Image (cartoon, rainbow, N blue to C red; front, side, top):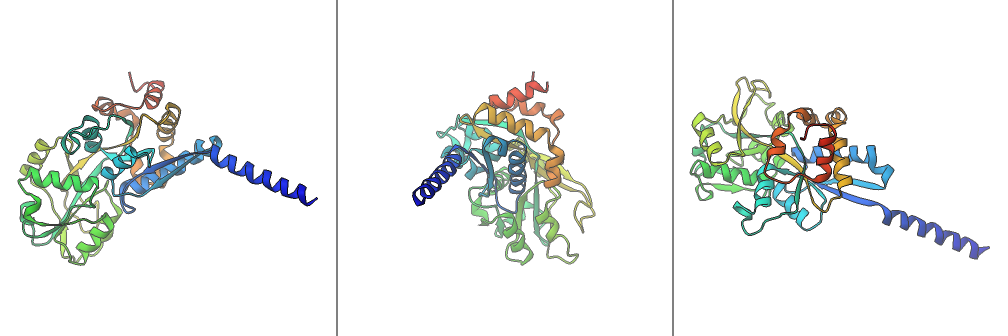
Length: 320
């Protein structure tokens, strides 16, 4: 009898292990836990699991990271299968240009366009232009993040180098805390408006910091030098104690993978995302900014789209 029980237990354990090994695991890498990408990635992973993952022995999970630059490394090293990534990192790595010269990553494939990220520039009250950051301390984003890449690009377009000011490398939540506590003179937070980290620090009517609205000349110089950074106006009263519109900047972002991702999974991710935007926006409001009828620019972006995603876009007649 004991032998029979032992055999049964062994069979149960073996069947359990076999079921684990049969399951396919997909990691979605995002950004810092207080940023846009992380919240969006958590929602997307939950949606994929609910709509098709559990029924087909697939498990999707979202992880935090330093952002787009690290996400590319995670894809290269096969430590993640899917990534949120800002547009310039996708383009530069695919073409082997700029910081990726001699280090081209031809395997990258786009799945779908995401919501834009807004550049929130906040500075101490005595600063009235970006040039006045010289000799001060500015949070450029985490090292290895897309935000840090954006910071460097913005300053370079205005003739400002990292030698001109002291850099702090912090995530969004740490950056806003540092500004609130007077430890730094300015910050850049890239997140679709209204961003929770910004809303939190704008509550107090008496603050030692303010939004920095860029001049037409500054915006023109930045956009000319870096066409992937585009103008944007944050409407008045988007945040508390913000009665005037803010002249700002933005960049777009994509959900990407590599050509190792099967056509079937890429197709399911594209289909599930676009056909469940109401579900997603209930989990993360920025998904409400996405609309499949307005993605012509996505198809013209000079980076390959995953064949599985193209199959879906052809199916719904948005890709010719």
